[in-house]
Image 1 (cartoon, rainbow, N blue to C red):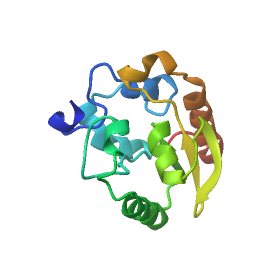
Image 2 (image 1 turned 120 degrees about the vertical axis):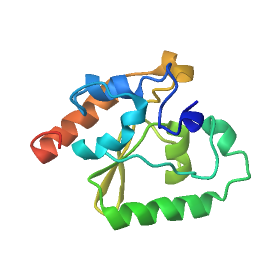
Image 3 (image 1 turned 90 degrees about the horizontal axis):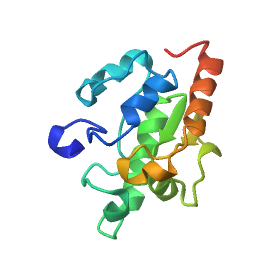
Image 4 (image 1 turned 180 degrees about the vertical axis):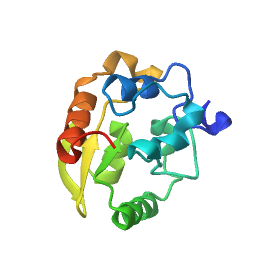
Amino acid sequence: MSWKRRAYYANPGNRFWQTLAEVGLTPRRLAAEEYPRLVDWGIGLTDLVKTDHGQDVHIFDGHVDLDEARRLLRAKVLRWQPRVLAFTSRTVAAQFLGRRAVPGRQPDCVGRTVVWVLPSTSGLARRFFEIGPWQDLARFVRDTTGGVS
């Protein structure tokens, strides 16, 4: 759905846009097609794997060069030095970090960038969704910036 609409988190069952607004990272719920406006609040979106789409579990079935994907994302983070790198998928976070990922702030940093793992907002993961780590991230952003940019 997102790939077809060329917008992140565009599936109507995905809670991403609702969650950003609920925790105060955006002032209102945005439509998926408004994703370019996230930079107004200091948020950027990217993917670990840019050459494929679908469920995370199917993307990492052996045909993706994970070493190259990790290298490219790490280089992007080091170049732009965002305050936070947040993964909205434990599967993707684990692939990037090279270890099991649990929700919350991670001990890992990429340069000065703090790494967070957040529960998936996908409709397929709805029964596992917890807003707590999202609230913790929003609090961290407010505490380290004096407010959401």
